[in-house]
Image (cartoon, rainbow, N blue to C red; front, side):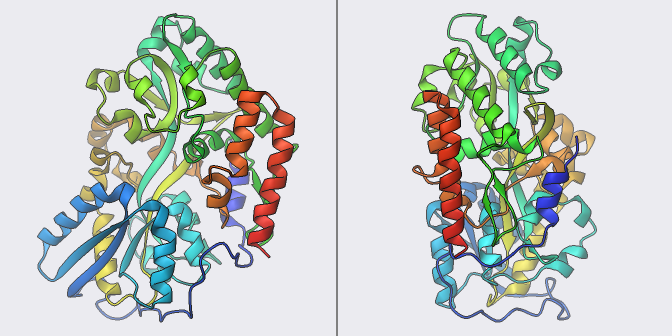
Length: 437
């Protein structure tokens, strides 16, 4: 498939600063990343902030780094995800920033636009594996051709399939997952197996999870729900055929009983439990949700594909973490040494053990592939990954009363697809306009 739309969104110049981020004070001084010994000979303490959602993996990484040498000591502080943006903005205003922040990649752009992060372009270019790093992560921290973050870990959406149920239904996974029509047919045939078996499942009352697993069907058609460059963006919902067909697909899943009735109220607190019980044919989700505390036999019987568009193509949400060095960091050199350690092959190869995917495609050796087959499709097809470049993502997609969840629930559960899209268009435009005022 072509990736012209996603490629355009990544490469286009970005516009004016939006006002969605809590205000930071005057710009802090940038460290001299070209100084002799930068990133190789630092001493002392390195203060690192991480997301609480990815704390477990960072804890092991810090322990390994601290044990590997005696010049630097990394101190890790986990921050609740819902507080991360505000706390970091507050630290910048107070001119007391950590040395390194491990941040949700979708939020990287907020701080890049405040000129709050150090330019890492030349440091990244010097990495001998720079061309193997996740382009989706990098795009979320690139402005004017300059890079202000390095990827650390990936948390990607994909379609996980129970091959036992596929075989019982007489389905071939590849043929059954090529487009939305084939998915719908497969869901019907799997549900027809009877009992409490269903073809599909989704958390119908959780905005963030739905943004993660549903949007890629639209991106696979080389379009998005937001159009334009940052600073001049508007909604691209009303009249978008890919969005309409996506909503029709989910409406059919619900009306035809191809998903559990519990999906209506599912807030993702038990996301994946029905799949782990062996009664779901397909679940759009992430590696961690599907494999954590799951019967090893079911994991072995699971295969994964990227999410298809209405008429084909593939895409996935390129989520995860970026590592950024705030301007004003007291030990920027030590911070880069730690970030570079995090990108080394041994550390990247271990990420699936904590439920995440590496950001280096060259990790995928035959040995790695044999151990972790379920992370391979996104890892080996990084160009199909995408996340919207906008400063309004949280207001649109992560708020329970935002236009994204409102549209999905009205379209899927009430059947008012055209009206839901028209209402969402107004909501998207309003939020984007306010952010760009």
